[in-house]
Length: 315
Image 1 (spheres, rainbow, N blue to C red):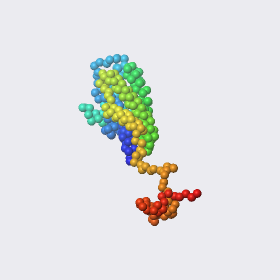
Image 2 (image 1 turned 90 degrees about the vertical axis):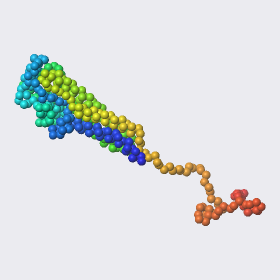
Image 3 (image 1 turned 180 degrees about the vertical axis):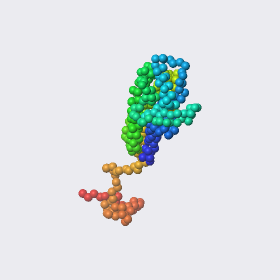
Image 4 (image 1 turned 30 degrees about the vertical axis):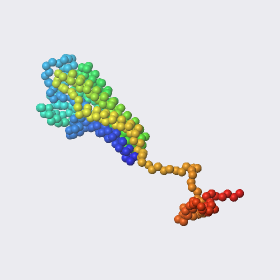
């Protein structure tokens, strides 16, 4: 029952660690397969250009926005501007929709790249332009910050994934001892730190990027958003990882795995009293089948010489 109880004690943190790993795997899989509907919904950032306005009534900044407008208009006329762009951890995908904005069809996904960041100049094929020429200071600053942070964000997700794998492997050894749980708790703490850091970074930077796109590109009816599905998966990974760390810590303090139903044996201590066989009865008094019974006490009136209760000492 001891090992069985130990296994039951670590089942919960092991299940939570596996759930956290699955969530991280889903984050990594976003936008990798254009034919998978689940992966298409897992993106950090989406630029919706379906309602691109080729004839805006008013441009807020003539110096920059007229240049940007001309570049976007040229991309739209040449069909280089798609209806939507979705950004994942490794790459981006683009595609078209019907007139109602439904039934999206992904037409292209870029090759996977570590520390990927979405560059609208390159993606929208704004040829012979630079960000300094077509984007104002606010847009340029948002893109620069986004580019700088993506390296740390990508590294944090990768480290969190592999440390979680190590946590699960170490959790197997935790079945046999509380020391195993202690080491697994350390790995779980490291995993939680990087998952939380990656979640905070990705949520913050893409929320800021979406806000910048919306404010700067609003005259062109280009809208930006984040995926609720991706945010849900990311923060579920944080919750599962944090909960698993608590349960691993609990298994370190409790559930030793030792059985409580052990047979207790009593050893004879030295100098204890034991009955010694009478020397007058010989070998027959050693507990054999022919052991003679002790003589009864004499009754009243019997001769005193018929019973000798004590050994006589000869001087």
